[in-house]
Length: 318
Image 1 (cartoon, rainbow, N blue to C red):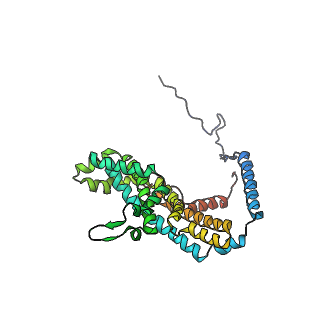
Image 2 (tube, rainbow, N blue to C red; image 1 turned 180 degrees about the vertical axis):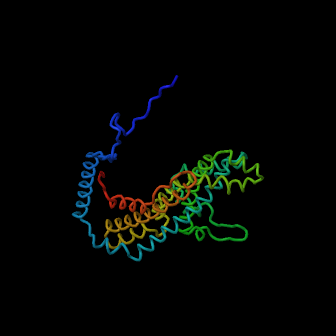
Image 3 (cartoon, one colour; image 1 turned 60 degrees about the vertical axis):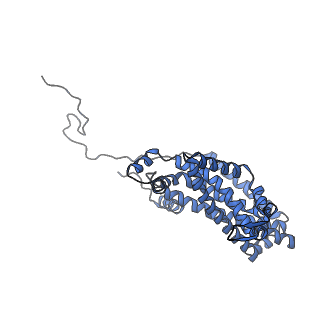
């Protein structure tokens, strides 16, 4: 008895005794979906943007003054002061954030309570009020006496010191919560494995936990720094000559108030755009261990798009 199986189709026609001479491989022609809504919304947005630009061009703004003040020495010094105070304040915030995040996660109730009180106070009061408190600290402590150093508080609390303390301590409270969230995102088994290998708590935190937590810490840290860069405009209240105060000083003497504010806006946009690009590459660096394929850089996207457009479109061959 012979089993019967379904045979796959062959190229031979029953009874003909001959196979097909050629096999046609027809190429599938994909027709892209037309997104008419995208085109319509894009045109509407371009029209609105053009109307906004036209309105500003027709307004009572002397654009020649704006162009002349963009690279004014006073504006450039104010921009440099803004960068310096923002970067230094962020460094203080990062250091304090790591320290108080570890204290907050500690099993010691004293260190945990101290960290909670620090975060509670500096996150619960406006940074503007904190700057004024530091600026008027001489009303509470007229003299600073550390034993090895003694001086009047007015001479110690210069505008630069006040701005650095006000922004740095405030930023440290927010960074503590960001770092704490990053540390808690790392699986506890990682720390347990390092302890089993004989690593200390400090070494485990620096070599195992924090490097893995950076993927979670970096994005909100970049946003915090950009926000700090803009918040630095508040330190003009403590007589520190940063970008906004430099623009206001020029505007009060030249009566070009709107023009100087536009110049300050241009520099703020330039600085935030630069650090946004830096944030993208830092996020991409720390995403290497979690993504199978890293996202393309802007240049790689442009290059891939150009290669796609320049690729030949061949038809079906017979």
